Length: 259
Image (cartoon, rainbow, N blue to C red; front, side):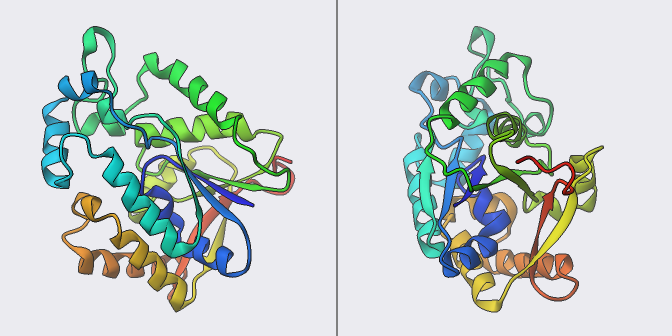
C-alpha cells in the first residue's frame, strides 16, 4: 500500500496526482488520508475572521463548505483510482484559541509558526492515525512543508511521529508552493533528504490535471482559471523533469531510512 497524508482536500492530488495515477495503473493500492477534512463547529464559524468570510465568498459553497469540499475530493481521487479517508479535524482557518479568538486570522498567519496551543492537536492527530489499518510493507508519503503552511507543518510532525520505525517514509513537494525554489530549500532546511524524480507519462499528467479540476471551489486560490492551472501544472512538471513531465519526491539516504 501507498498511503499519502494530505493536509487539506486537494494537497495530495496537487502534489502527487500523476504518481498516484501511475501507481494505481500498476496495480498498487493507494490510499489518501486527508487530515483537515472535518466540519467546522458552528461556534467556530460564528467567530470566523474576515479572512474566512472572504474565503467562503470566493468558494461559493455556503456557510459550511466542508461537505462540498469532501465531495470534490472524492471525485478527484475517483479519477485517479485512489481510496479516500477523511479525518475529522477542521482547517486551521476555523480553529480558535483563548477567548474564542481565531488562531490564524490572516492569510499571512497560516504561513507562520504553529500556535503553541496546538501541541495537543498534534497528539490528537497521531492518536487518530494510529487507528488506521496500515500493512507493514506500506510506504507513507508526508508533505515536505514547502510554503510553511501551519496545517502542513502539523501533518508532517504528526506523520513522522506516527510512522517512525514502522514504515518507509517519503516526502512530497507541496504544490503549488514548490513553484518557488526558495520554499523547497527552506522546507529542507538541514534535512539530509535526497531527491527522486518520478517521470510522468502523458496519460498520468492529463489525469492529474483532470483531478485537480474537480476542486472547483479551490481553483481561484492558486490560479486565474482552469486553463492557467493546466499550463502551470505542466510547466512545473517539466521543470522538475528537466524537460519531461515529472514529480519530485524526497527520501532519507539509505543509511538513515526509517525501517
